[in-house]
Image (cartoon, rainbow, N blue to C red; front, side):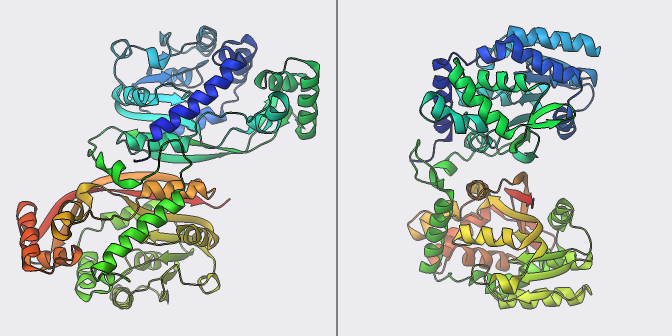
Length: 569
């Protein structure tokens, strides 16, 4: 049974809700006039650095229609209205709606249309469709499946969600004090990593930007600090208040503005632009076999899929990187590199923003696809590449374009020692992550980087698998074993405590060949089609999909690739 992330979200959300109901929390926290007043006072005082960052990140054009779900006191809605957007909000709390109106009037913002409802209960007909849909730290939603689908349906152009990737700094008190005050562990709402997986399960593959928040909660007086923590922890007697006061005093810092409880946390900006999405429901059934409700070990999931894929290749005589050392394959890669479409390479280099003069480690560099342009751009490049033909091709390419020398380590990444690799400003691995023991492989990448790591990998799809998913069962009598995708990779990084940014690119992919014979031979190699009857099946597949172009042939398609990166703290 495939992992059902939506069920996992619902289970965690229900546990958090039960805790709120027991202690009379839930929506009452957002109706408490003291909490609302504190939020509004901060907005009025201009403590809006987070809001400014969110507005800058979303880049919503002036004049857009915007739907703000769970708008609270208007933290985003009022500035968006001031910026010239036509704003509708869905907000269930009467107190928050009144606070938003107060804030709007004080700021001199245009009218904001208000729908007084929970998002789960809002009528889609009343909500309508808007250019952009926003939900900022308001995703404690019931029935996340329908809620997310309704969010997506309400957007014409883009959706922006902001949520916690790690528990916010103030919840440290809940972790430490809840067992002493109430018995049992504190039940958190599900976090942004699970939200991203829910969206992928719904065939929405969004981007992620991670924000590292170092600012703790700030208060004007010591008494207000204690009072707020007591409200959040549902302390109702003097003994509990004494416990909270002791906790706060040990951590409190006095600043010019008052008192602050320092802490760090991570939040996620999850967003996607509306466009065509390839349905691939079978992807989730192929991905893994973990029952809902159990802890998911993504590292073992990756290693297991890699082992199955490698075993299948070895049964076909294609193990140990044989495909990438095939001289015909290398020659075609080099030809496409020199005379083919270079937009992907240019986009990758532009996306990494590596300063000239940086030392760069390129893992699985192939024929120098990124290594040579980076050397030309003034970087000092070291590559780790196990294939001798690929290494020779890179050297030929480097000489042809007169790029500076590149240091080469002829080894698999799993086998190379950290001492031989050294430490570099930036580590890059582009489409070269077919690795076992992914825990050690990723940690070694992280340790080898001073400033940043950039990984490029695939989100598998039927059209992106080169015919393997469709044809493998007919050719070999078993399902095709894909490598684990970028979704598993990002979750594995989170499991290691590395919270990376992620950007998804869906684009047309064209395999280009100089002749029909070269096209057929490449597919025979990829699909391990050695018998005449197998090649007849491949020929029929290509007859339907291949098209002549100029003096050669192309196989059109599209694929989803992912850029995953993190900067070292």
